[in-house]
Amino acid sequence: MTHFYNRIVNYFNNLDIEGIFDLVISRGVQLIFTIILLSLLRWFAERLVSIYFNRNNISEKAKQRHLTLKKLLDNIIQYTYYFFLGYSILAILGVPIATLLAGAGVASVAIGLGAQGFVSDMVNGLFILLERQYDVGDMVTINDYEGFITNIGMRTTVLQSVTGAVHFIPNRNILEVTNESRCPRRTEVDLVIDPDVNMEKLNAVIHETVEASLPNHDLTEAPEYYGVCRDLDGRLVYRVRFMCINDHQWDVETYYYELLTNALAKNGIEQPIVLSTKQVTTR
Image (cartoon, rainbow, N blue to C red):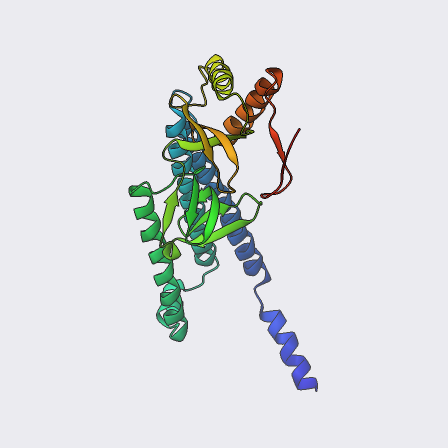
C-alpha cells in the first residue's frame, strides 16, 4: 500500500505543472483565435453574398434566381466553415488526423459510402441549378410531393406544401419535377345560370363588367368569353377564362367571382342556388 502511495506521489511530483499550464493556455489561445478568425471569414463571405444578391435593379424572376443562388452559396459557406473549424480544432489539439483516416479500416469504408451519397446529392443539385429546373419560390411537384421551394442546398431541396408540411428531399432522390411557376396560369370563372335567363342581357352584362375592370395587371392576356356551357357536374354555366401571372390565379378568380356575381345581381339576373349536383333551386 505504501509503495502504491509513493508511486502516486512521485508521479505528481514529476508532473511539469507549469508546462501543462502553458500548454493549456497556448492551445486555448490558438483555439479562440482560430474560432474568431473563421467566424469573421464566414461573416465576411456571407456579407459579400448578401450585398451582391440583394440588389434592387433586377426583375422579379431574376430575384427568384438570385435568392436560389444566395441560399446555395450560404449553404456552401456553412459547410466549408464547419469543415475547417473541425479540422483546425483537431489539428490544434494534436490529433493525428491523417493517421486516424489511414487506419480507420471499416470506418473508412462507411465514411466512403456516406460520401458517395453526398457526392451524388451535390452532382444532382448542380445539374438542377444548371438546367434551372426550379428556383426558390417556385410551385413544383417533386416525385409525389407538391408545394413551394423554400431552399435548395448542396444535399437537399426543401419544399413546403400548402398545408404547411415541410419536406426535405435528398437531391439524388429527385427523379421527376413538374414546375408550375414558369408560365402564366389559367383560371376559369363559372357562373351558374338559369336556363330561362335572357342570354343576350347576360352576355352584355358580363362583357361590360369584365371590360370595365381592364387593364388588370394580374392578367397576361385578354379574357376569353367561352359563353354558355356545362361544367363537370352538368350544371349550366357561363364561363370566362383568364390567363394570370403565376401565383396570382387565386386572387383573380376570387376578384372576378365577386365582381360578376354583384353585377348580375344588380342587373336583376338571378343565379340558381345549387343544393347538390342533382337539385337546383332559384334564389
